[in-house]
Figure 1 (cartoon, rainbow, N blue to C red):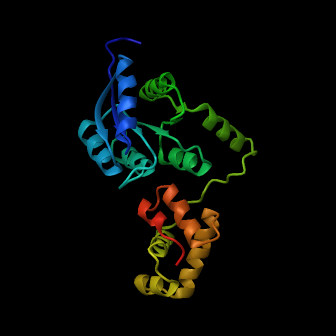
Figure 2: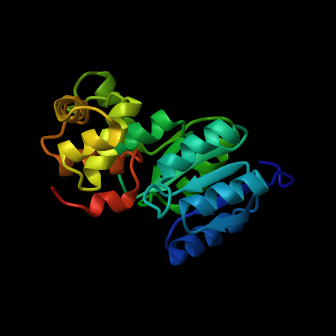
Figure 3: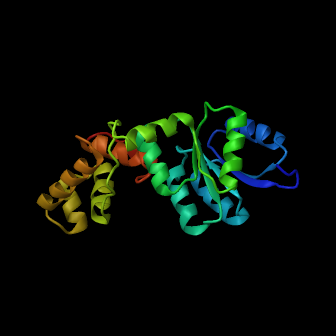
Length: 224
């Protein structure tokens, strides 16, 4: 690779020590320049908009906006920036949500510095970068051997109902808030549970939070 190439990277992770470690080995590579660091999702969006990096390296679980939400925002607003998700999570729902959001790569934090650097280079070159473990999961899913089923997106109304349920509203209170009957609310929740493969409000809210569809603080609430 030519020494004249400088891949401009933004790092977003809510742990400063993690960012420092990643920055150190990336900048030692010689062809990567870390132009900005963010400690939460909102800051990541602001800095991506300002710097327009070649590659944004994002964690999934961040305050204010998840890596999944930031990825969707990047695809809609700064399409020239590649997105590499670097995370500790290899659960199927996370993987599918990240890829459906439009990420160019998905690498686990257990990867070696060399593997992460190569993933940045691949995303910069317009290629996909996939951790071997994740690639195997995806191949199993395509072959029909995975137990995971892709999650069907919720409608706007279903999202409204789930959001209020996550805040502790009863069916009746949700109905009053949205101007619909509590029976209609019950129907919406039944479809939400079905789509998210959940058996309770708490499970549905937690699944939606993990997918980046609801803010993380709602995941701290229990059944109401």
